[in-house]
Image (cartoon, rainbow, N blue to C red; front, side):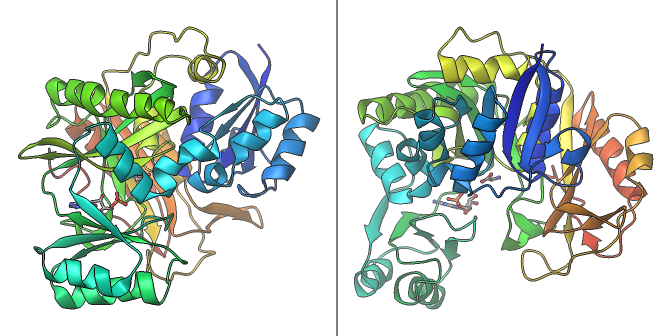
Length: 420
Ligand code: AMP
Ligand code: GLY
């Protein structure tokens, strides 16, 4: 068929969404705004930013787009779904009110309390002195979370009073991320995993689970990043853990959103931790995870266009099937990331890498300059390998990484260390 789809966003997650849509026989044309040099091979890139909500709406009307799919949280928090809905356009994602589950940590924590969903105990502060007093009277490490969107950088795990004081000062006195509050949270331990579900109101359809690696360097050391690699499935997470997470976390929260008058439609992402006391919530996101999507969607065997329309239109959901293959992805990032880094370095060897087979390369931050592929972001490429086991997927991916030549990239070789 000939459906026209617009994907909003430009990183590896959107490349994986575009890739999944391009496998649908129903989809005839894909646009991506703004896209990137890799996405351009599968979609027509549109020079609009993910926050240019009105311009995106005009584009969708003009080009008679059948379905828009939103990648980044900034577009959702900016109300893109509300604007498209008002214009009678079909769009996959939550409204601004429902996106609050990610954009406000305080909202998410209170919702979890109301729904009796297991999570770390917490208190919210807007006053620096009060927050400091509370932290002084509690245990270390303690988790301090800025109550707003901070691109994964608004969370500090303070080991002692000095670190806590400096983080609270950044967040509450110096407004480093903007004017906001701070959630002070109990520190939990255990392996984390990402449980993304398609959600339409109180109906919840689970995806296969994955695990992200947030720290920049091997051994889970160094600063937090947007994610340095991921794999799926996650053998240490049992079927019972998944069943528990679905029944006692994702479904009650989806029902809680309906009860609050802000029904959720789209992908609800549970950032969960398997603690010694059972699975607990670390955070919720209101969209596909990045880089988890790059290892989850290539394993999807069902037509994703049908899934998207089932959620947006409330039509019957097809059976969602997953390949038994394992997937593991290595992020190649610019040297210096997540701090400052340079752009514009030539990248070569991608065709050779893909020719090895059992490989997909998703572009995170690339551009074309004078006919050549160059780096244009902190995270540049995600090389995903597939195999009958995680170990063979890892071997395929690392061999492919070895083909890629660029003077300014680094990566973590230990993605998957918890299970390999
Ligand atoms: P968040 O942005 O809330 O996902 O936090 C970023 C990272 O900080 C998480 O992926 C965890 O590794 C860590 N973290 C957040 N909250 C906690 C907690 N309560 N206990 C332990 N680690 C946490
Ligand atoms: N990988 C974590 C996130 O998408 O927020």
